Figure 1 (cartoon, each protein chain N blue to C red):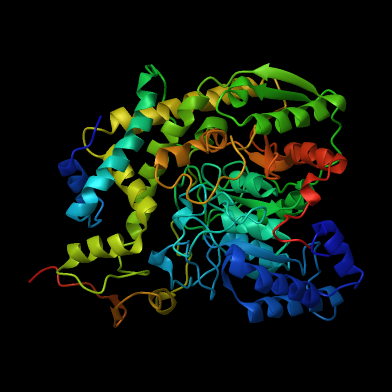
Figure 2 (cartoon, chains in turn orange, purple; figure 1 turned 90 degrees about the horizontal axis):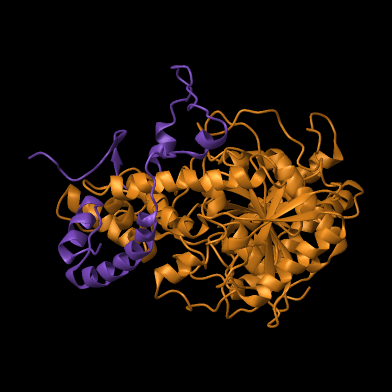
Amino acid sequence: MLNASLKELSGALAAKRISAVELTGLCLDRVRALNGRLNAFITVDEERALQDARAADARRAGGVGARAAGPLAGIPVAHKDIFCTRGLRTTCGSRMLADFISPYDAHVVERLAAAGMVLLGKTNMDEFAMGSSNETSHFGPVRNPWDAARVPGGSSGGSAAAVAARMVPAATGTDTGGSIRQPAALTGVSGLKPTYGAVSRYGMVAFASSLDQGGPLAKSAEDLALLMNAMAGFDARDSTSVERPAEDYTRELGLDLAGLRIGLPREYFAEGVEPEVLARVREAAAWFESRGARTVELALPNTALAVPVYYVLAPAEASSNLSRFDGVRYGHRAREYADLNDMYRRTRAEGFGAEVKRRILIGTYVLSHGYYDAYYLQAQKVRRLIARDFAEAFARCDLIMGPTAPSTAFALGAKTDDPVQMYLNDIFTIPAPLAGLPGLSIPCGFDRAGLPVGLQIMGTYFAEAKMLGAAHRYQQATDWHLRAPRETPL
Amino acid sequence: MSLTLDQVRRVAELARIAVSTDEARAVAEQLNRVLGLIDQMQALDTRGIEPMAHPLDAHLALPQRLRPDAVAEDDRRGELQAVAPAVDGGLYLVPKVIE
């Protein structure tokens, strides 16, 4: 049951082969058994989860006044601890919000609750989603279920590890520069970063507002499509939510691969990528060719500038967004201070960890008088060039494929001393959010050490259904996504 | 471009983050590494390129949506202030600003 797809779980619940309470109990047992080692969850509220499960069972049983049960009713989900949950603490992985209880639910939380999903708990993450290894969390690092000495990636590392270890069948994440796709790749699960504006940011703690986008992590592309059907959609409370008709993200799961044009950007198959990662990605591309797809070599010439651009824009937006944490309205407040300004300075010095402070300082600097044109404006111009590169590429192909990350999971502590080394890990995931494009990662094999490799599939704006279709066809022919990690056998 | 210790202190002051003298040196070193990375983009000639402030601008050319200027929220002051570090009589308490 723990390795079942959402469709199978949905069928089992509908046929009364299992109840939501039983399924939730299985997940809670698994969390109790594994979380001490993996640290994937920050908060688990067993009573609340079982209450949700009882409600879902009642809904499935029908009866007077019961709302019709959708396909996800009774299936447990874990939310990244960046999504506000009413009455259940939302820490964002930070001391600043260690005791914060939101007075409202995020849109995504509301949507999945309305679909009848059971809220199992809140997952660990890099502090304020700033990190690529889950090592910046105030609540300690998450460990990779494939090798506990390695990181699960980040920032949605807890969500990825929880799904990989089969603690929960589905989780939410957010992606600003790769925070869904990179941990999905490093833990062997599937993760989708939707087109900017497809999923409401309401109630999602803001990091870099022109980049942040919520999305699902699960075992397969088919699962992601079902979750997107429930998560995505217009929300008037997010001014960047795109108003468009509701979409069925499962509609292209039967995608005909014959004639599909797959772009392979040469910058994604270059030096600096582990040879075994490249080999697995090439094998996946060859599989698509064997099914009638055509590969097109193309160039995304500004790829190398994406990381520098991102480390101007994301910190600039973060320095503004995180100014709200001042110890006045919510969150941590320093115990001792001389005056108001000193209260701000000490509150923020105590409440934020080193990486968050670093990014706020970088952001403050690039926006400061005399540097704005050289940094912020130049970065916005290069951002447009990166978006144009993609527009030209998608004139020649339907989907772009390449590695999600340049390496498999690295050891804890391996990149913590040098922020630049950590940042460069996101070289292939940063371009899509800069352009606002959707991207997903699915497992496509293992390296010699037995660590999963991620295949990234990118599409043009709102091409999620086609991307999910291609990924699903691949997963029908392969079983990488069904393999459970060796540290957490089923 | 390289940040001096004075510049780090100035930026920290603007960001309202206390940085001790001991920390400032390490922070400067790390920030300079990041600025070294960022400076790579200076090599690109971007004359005539329109800055892209927002991804929706790239594909939909959408202006930001406006909503009618009408009350849309209920009064939830009690609930919202329940998470504040210090309140009194519906007001947020902060250290005295004016003597």
